[in-house]
Length: 508
View 1: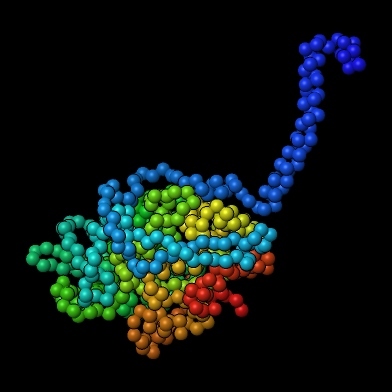
View 2: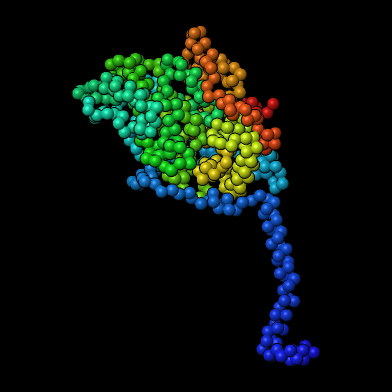
C-alpha cells in the first residue's frame, strides 16, 4: 500500500528509500532524544540552583595580566639554594572544608589550619636580592631600634631626597622632606674623611586591620616622646609600594626603592643620633630609649602583588609572603594587631571606601554577590589561594577577605612566635582606653607614663571616627548581618582557638 501511495504521488524510488530511512531513524531515536533533552534540562536546573559559576572559576583560574613598563623583581642570577629553613621548624597552611550542599554557606563549615612551605634564605634572596645587599645581618647594639650606618657618597650639592618616590607622589609631604633636607648634612657622621648615614627600620609594626582602630592607636602612641613613627603613617612599602602599587586596582607604577622607605625614618634616626652624639659610630653600648615604628594596616593581610612577581600559577598559593622577608632581617620584631567584629568591620569598610549611592540595601546586594563569589572560589581553589588571589580580591564588591583574620595571622605564626604579637580588640580598646594603652606600653617595654603623659594619651579625642553622613545611613539590614555572621563564624571560632580566648568569637 505504501509503495502504491508513493507511486501515485509520483515519488521516485530513490526518494522513497530515503523516506523509509528517515522514518525508521526517527522512530528509533525519538525516545533517545527526548531522554537526552530531559537530562540536559535537569543538569541546567541543578547548575542554576547550586549557584555554581564555572565562568567565574575560569576567570579566577586564569592569570591576570597587565602591561608593565618594568621587569619583575626576581633575580636573573641562579643561586644555590641552602637547606636551612627561615624561622621555626613548624610549617602551616589553610584549607577549608565546605559545608554540604543545601546548608547556608558556610554555617557548619570547619576551618583547618595545615602546613605551608617556608622559603629558605636563599629563596628569598633570589626574589629580592637588593634587600639583602642593603640591610645588614646585624644592627647597632647601642640602638633599641634596628639601625646601622651606611656610607654616604654624595656631596653638598646633592639633594638626598630629590628622587624619593614618596615625596614626589604626595605633595603633603613636601614640607616634611624639606625640613629633613635642611638638616641632612648636619646629622651625617664623619670618620676618616668619610660620611656615614644612620639608617633604621621599624622596631615594631602596627600591621592590621583596616577600620579596626589602628589610626586611633597610632595617634595616641606617637604622643610618647620615645616613639618615632615613619613620617607617613602608612607607607605600605612591604605590601605595595615596593612593587609599584600606589592604589589598589590601579595600573602599576615604578617601584619605590628600599632607600625611599628608609628615608621615612630619617627623623627618628636624627633623634637617635642626638642621644648618642659622637658615641654611636663607636657602638659604645649606651642604649638609647627611642623606638621606631610604622602603621601600615595592609601588612597583615595584603600579599596581592605575589601573583605578578613570584612565579604565579593559577589556583596556587604564594611561594613567599611579606612576613618571610621581615623575619629574614628582623626575627625579633614586634607586631601590634587591632581586630574588630568582622561583620562590623566590613560595613565600616564599605561606608568608608564606597564613593556614591551608599545604602544598607546596596551593601546587602554587594555582600550577597561577594559570598557567592567566595563560595565559587573555594570550589576551585584552597582557602589560602582565595585569600591571596589578586584577581579575586579586586573583583569582590566588598572586601570580604580582610575579615578572615585567622587565615593571615596563622601564616605570620609560621615564622614568628605568638609572644611577638600584641593582639587587641577594638571593642575592648574603645571601652577601656587606659587599660588598652597600658598593655601597649608594657608590650613595647616603654615604661610607665607619668600622670600628665597618661592623661594626654588617654583623653585624646578618638581618631578616624565614622563620618556624620555615613552615620545617617543607619545600620546594615538584619538579613545582611545574619549572612555575614554565619559566614565569619567558623573563622572566628578558629581564631578564638588559636588565641585561647573566646572573646574573638564575637558572640555575646
